[in-house]
Every structure is written in structure tokens, then in C-alpha cells.
Image (cartoon, rainbow, N blue to C red; front, side, top):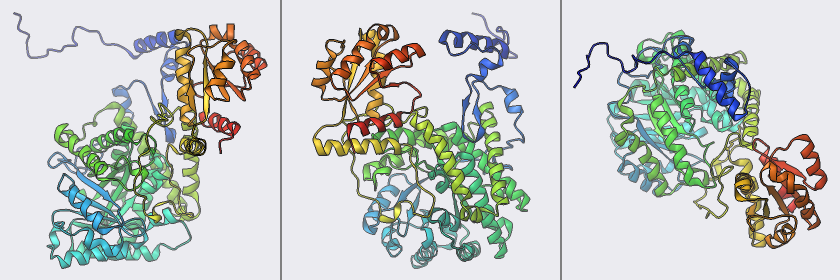
Length: 635
């Protein structure tokens, strides 16, 4: 047996170093075989770049050179600029804070859920109080039996933050909780209220009240924070990652100004803030966002005169409500798992996993159990928190963190030039920019370039609806504030039309999948077409398996459909498509589609024969499906 020397041994020593040019040549060959492009060299590599929001892009290959172009250094965990975490030990000792959200308006029902969560792994409570959840006077009942010296409480009371804060503080006094054992956040966030409700209300009064709470916490309750910088309002309105970060910075700066003007030192003012961000199923963007947020806030703290670790941003990550779907909600479990993983890897101090039925109403006990266990499994079984900043050093993550930080800082500077976050909200600057971002993203959702599993891809028309108790009346968006958007909203509107048609007639609108030729020729496009039409609530009928010009009229009549879609390969289309399309029109088909993108000559011939429209990958699915339902008379 040969014994290999320990020193200097490398498994890669016998392999020559590969250059980027060699890799690009391999890419060229693959692209040519796929018929994608004839580009060569850097152009071939550029063909694989994925464009993101905020002018960012994901390259197919990263090397040490890419990380070297990033400005600034990530530093070490627990040290400025805190990119790698606000504490040297990160969450390795205790894991992140598992924070469950509760919004049930019945205090006793809320109390049952709260106790169940605390007994089964949840480490802090996030209570929605006021018109969007628990009544202020029900706070004591909801927290009955809760050891307030062990379970931190975070309030989210909107405009009623002052009343809710005083109610919680009274509860601490009544239950004789030691001042040093209080923890959590009173949830004052006047600018988030302005963002949600709009209007011309001067935030000076609420800011003064928030500063008063902050002063009391600083003097008497060192473990309690008074203010939250909630960036979810901007994410929920369709904002990009950079816009979410920039708005949070502008809000944080406004609060620093108010707190220091009220007499707190810069260090004490920073200690009163907790930042709340959305975590999405785009795991790397979420990781980069949380890392960039700490870096940006460290810069704000530095120029504000904050010393030491006081500039370390305290982060609460919440799985995105925008990505949650109402159809096939079980898939939300997968989305929130990825988002939770990203939040943990990104270094969030506290993580809230929204229950999979969050978009449907008040979550039930099973959904809350799955939500809290998502964090527990990642912590206890996957040991995700054992490594501090596990993404640190990744050339891709470091580059993305740097680029996102620059994009967010640019937006933050624009907000400051506009007079600050409050002024930018009142003038409509924020709403306008977020709307533009969402409009661009909506186009990608409509064309299914951004697929939504269970909604725009692989929908199940036969699924049984999941029914939940309705949310409190004040939960929806305020007419004058920022909207609340969801990725599924355009398709949800189409599916709602189909549901109404089903309820009125006993059947869904149907489309005949007119497959031509053998299965090998038509299966791919028949599957594509069935998937497309089901996304709009239109039931595909693929019976018989294959049709031709002589049998398609009978198939249309037996299907109960008034619309048909031809599906096959280009060679079979050339032989049969014109005749079959003509037969369908003679049989009374209101609309005839053809799956594919034929050349100009073929296209003109098919149109003359009776084909009305072509459906293909990258086409506007929402527009096609909406027009089909219109022609079917589906209201």
C-alpha cells in the first residue's frame, strides 16, 4: 500500500488549471447544439446571465476575481461593518429567535394559540394589535399564563402603538416582571403607518410619542426596544430588494434624528431600533439582502457617531407574503422553508415563518405547527445555525451583497434628497417607484418567465379549496396607502371567473386539446397547452388522444368545448394543421389556437386556414387566457 505524504498533497495537483477562455469555449459548443446562439467568447458567457431587479445580474460563473471587484471588506462576525453578523458568535449558541405571529381578534383563542406555540418551540411572540388583530384591551387575556420574563413580546399595533405599548408596560408592572428581564419591542413605527394608510398626517406627533417610549425603555427597561423599522410595507407593495433596503435606511435615519433630538445619544437611539425585512424563496438574494442591510446600517451608524457594536443592526426576517399563493397553498410550505433557510444563513436574529394558509385567512393550529417546526428542523436537525455566516467567502454572495448595497444606497440617497422618507411617501415618490417595479415584475409573471408553481405552472383544477376564518376587517390595504400585491393575483382573478362559471353552470369552461399525429410528436406541446389553459381555470379535454381533419369535429362536439388548441410537432403541422383548423372552424369553434411559433410563411398559411392565435413559451399567458374567457362569455 502506498502512503501519501501529508504535506503539500492536493487532489487537484495532477490536473491542469482551466482558464475562463476554455470554459467559454465549452459554453459555445453547448449553446450551438441547443440552437440558442452562435455567440463566442465573453458573448457566449453573457448569454447565460440572468437579469435581476435593480439593475443586478447573476452570472453563470464566479471566480476570485469577481469577489475582488467588490468594494469594501466584509470584515469579521461581530465587528463593523457587520456584514457577517452583528455578534461574533452569530446564532451558533442558541439559534435564531423563532418568532410566531398572532393576529386572532378573539383574546381567548389567541391565548390558546400563544401557549401552544410557546410549549412547542417558539421563543418569542409577535402580536398584531388594533384593528388588524387583537384588541388592545384583550392583550392581558391573550398573554394569560405566559412567562413574560422568558418570552419576549413584539407588538405591531399600527397607529394604536402608544395605547398598545402602555397596555404591555402596565402588564409587566402588574405581573412584577423584573425590569432587567423584559424583552421584545413595543412596535412604534409611525412611518410604516404613513406608508400603509397614506394621507397628509404629520408624523411629528407620533414620532414624539415613539421617542418618549424609547426614552423610558432606555432608562428603565434595557432589554426592551421601542421602535421597529418595518420594511415589509415596501416589499408587500411590490418593491425590489434595493427599494426595501433603501426605504428602511431612510426610515431608520428619520428615527435616529427624532430620538437624538429627544435627548438620547446616538448609541442609545440605535439600540432602540429593530429592522424587519422580507425573506423570499430566492435564497441567495435574501442572504445578500440581509448582509447588505447590516453593512448599510453600519455606515449610517458610523457617520452618526455611533461607537462599537451599537451600530450592529438587529434583524427580524419574515417569510414573504407576496410569494404566498391561495391556490395549492401546500406549496407555500416549500417556499417558506427555502425563505427560512435563507434568513438563517443571512444572519437574521429573529425569523417568522408565515403559515402556509396565511393568504387564506387566520391560520389553523396545523399551519402554525408546520410554521414553527420549519425553524426547529433547520436548527435542531439540519444544524443550520452552527456555522456563523456560512455564505461568507462565496464569490457569488459577496459580489451580490456588494452590488445590492450600492443599488440600495443610491435609492436611499434619492429619498434623502427628496426630503426624507416621510416627504417621499407624502409626495408619492415611493408609491410611484414601487408601482413601476411591480409593473415590470407583473409582465414576467404574465409571461411565466417567473413561474408560480401550482398557479401559473402545474395548476390542479380539481383541488379542494382550503377554507379558513376570515382576517379582521382592517387587515386589507388602506385606500390611501401602499397596495398589497401577490404574485398570484392575475391568475387568481382568472381562476375566480372559472369558479363562478362552475358554480353557475356545473362545469368549467373547456378547451379541446386537438393533438395531431403520434404521441411522440404531440406530447410536449399538448402538455404545455393543457398547463397553460388550466392556469386560467379552463379545463383541457384531451379525448381522443389523436385527431385529424375527419374526426376533430366530432371530438369538439363531444368535448363540450367551444375553443380548441392544435398540438403537435412542426412536421405534422405542415401536413395536417391547415385542414384540421378549417374543420374546427366549420364545426363552430369560436377560437382556434396552435401551440408553437411557426415561421412567417407557415404562420400566414395557418391563419388563412382558421388558426386565430399562437401560444408559446414566453407569450403573455394572462392576456391570452383573459381573452379566451371573454370569448367564452365567462364573466
